[in-house]
Image 1 (cartoon, rainbow, N blue to C red):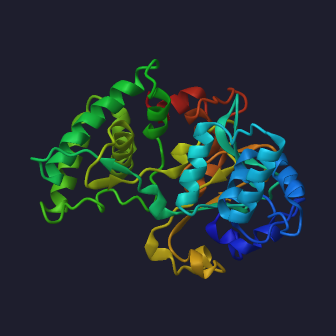
Image 2: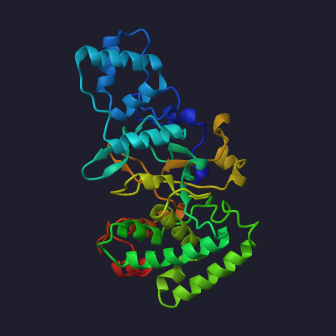
Image 3: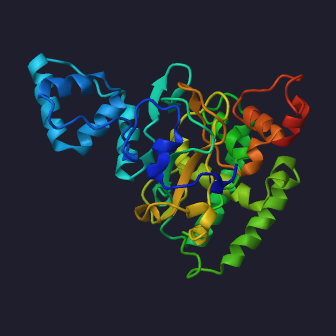
Length: 359
């Protein structure tokens, strides 16, 4: 997969999905269905809305006051008790809507007993099709705690020490609720637009190079007793620590840590898509932004199918580069999420995967 493989603007999604049965007039804000005609009666409109999945129905109700009014009348007339989906689904919908996340009309968010909350293909989807476009600013969501008497530099160093120890201990404790998440962080490829220290006001408090020197020293000290740390590399390990901290502490503070949006969505099965992430400096790159509508020129993370997806399959997101679609990359990705390839099927042996994971 290469980002330039998907040509045309988001409005061309309809044409790209050749197997689709229900066309949509361009991308909709969290909407997977055609908008009902204004000439239909309230009863007809209400019946159509009732037949939609809660995710789609809620999207239409939020986007059109007239539709919302007629739906309320329909519910009252028929004395219906309609649930708009589980609270966690509603929360995800509100989160996406508020941040202007664009979802292809052939992808839906729903929850299953086996796969949990996730993205599912509504129809068959050809590879290299853009599925979701997320403003990169929507990923900056979790603030970090800070001791008032500390400057940003010392707070970061203190938290880094704590996070490194917590990561190591949690990774070896299978009963810890965060064990699976930490296993993912251990080898989570570094997003190319990860700001790392850029969103911290270090420059006014201390030279940024001081932090990098400290971090290298910390990395070496842990690498002597925990070989897996030495295989992280500095930037990926720093990313894992900051992401873990943002999930573990949170709270009100002045500084934010970049958290992947797709952490909000559970994963399971086999890989179907990848999030190609680029820094804002490449927005003028023809291969990346060619044909993108003017209102989407601001930085977006694009979720692109890297293989043909059958209707009903769950779509799995992973931050990665093109190497993730190689055979060893697929094996490693499956192992990371708990799907260990059999010895006679994987290109890498179980011992190789254990060696790579380091746990």
